[in-house]
Image (cartoon, rainbow, N blue to C red; front, side, top):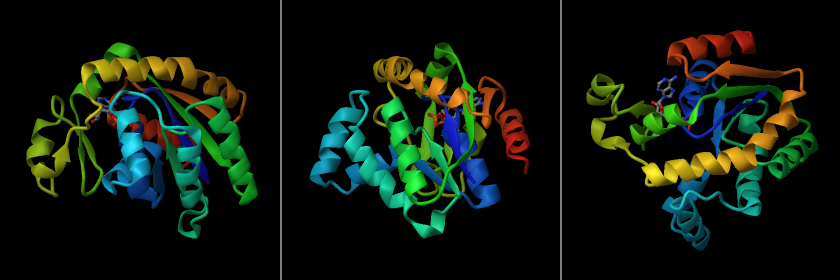
Length: 213
Ligand code: ADP
């Protein structure tokens, strides 16, 4: 079944998605990662995206939809996608339903990780992500794990848009455009809210409970 992990930037969506990927052989569809990959490829579209995300803005719906379609139609990922950080607005949510229906798929669960702005600030300021294996750690909370990281600690990089002003801008953008998406999904029976301020392992256990695995 496909799953949506929902919540503000820094809620821990990527961290939790990684657990599900490893344990259940899922595909983590992070539109942030898809967009950053395009930037790395240095295409004209990648350059446009770079300008937007380094200012804390979101990429256009058309851009995201085109990248998204590519993954949804990939048979390897069929019914095994975790949408991490998507959809971000109601238009995208409706569009996602349409694309999934077109390929005879649906969303099995929507999980909302709820956290406050002050927690988000601390987490994002310390976030480091491995450019080889995608693991997310935190320079304040995971000092030892960073030193012992199997890919080598030089692969753990800070994101360009993880600075204080951009973090605040991203959170505010989220509150304005993404929160209405909650109403769209919260009426659904497969919707669960989890306290994202809890410990990583606790959250992971709750998610496993929800997914019944
Ligand atoms: P998102 O994908 O929602 O933006 P991440 O998974 O990248 O969030 O997490 C942001 C930062 O917070 C990372 O540095 C991560 O290691 C840390 N983090 C994630 N979940 C928790 C948690 N439950 N408690 C403490 N730190 C966390």
